[in-house]
Image (cartoon, rainbow, N blue to C red; front, side, top):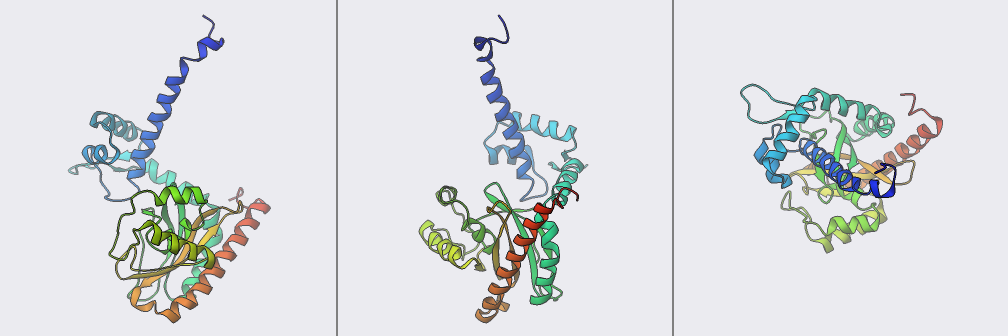
Length: 275
């Protein structure tokens, strides 16, 4: 039978499908290491992803052989390896928004005296990509690279508010776990907050993602007009009084617009490719 015939090509579809599924499993395993415990074992990964332990073990061994994951003597479980760290560092260097956001977020940190952050949209979650810490003794800091759901906290809500309606509704249809007692977990209540956020262009959180933490965030739009992340000012909740929050709203909104403008200019000038 000729391998170029129509009949000869049809049996390849299941293999292609199987290959896609296998690649997705590998990606899902790697993504688990971007949040939660530093070390993960076969059993915990198996439970989280609903995969057989034998399948998880094969994936882990393959990733270890390519230094995407590693093990340590005397420690049970796997951690991210040097190849994964290098890949993450390379991605950060190539993220245009991080380049243009750096001076703006530093200035915003100096203007407010609070920590400023940059988050990126990754799949259906967000990840902190950078932070500029407050010089104050009592301050808030974030975990770079850790994943968070979009419904909890100002940085996530402001991204969720500007996603396409169908994608937003799909996320609201999922379970909305409470990270604190102030996390909004009712879809209708969250829809009302998101509508207000979309009108105002800014989201506020007072203890929704982390107890005792306050934050004000604005969406970060890319040159394509889509929301790609957010920036925020964050600190101890007791310092986020109504007057302070009102001031931060204007500052964060203006900073996000400056980053959007500079990002578009960077793309148009070809500067991103030369970095």
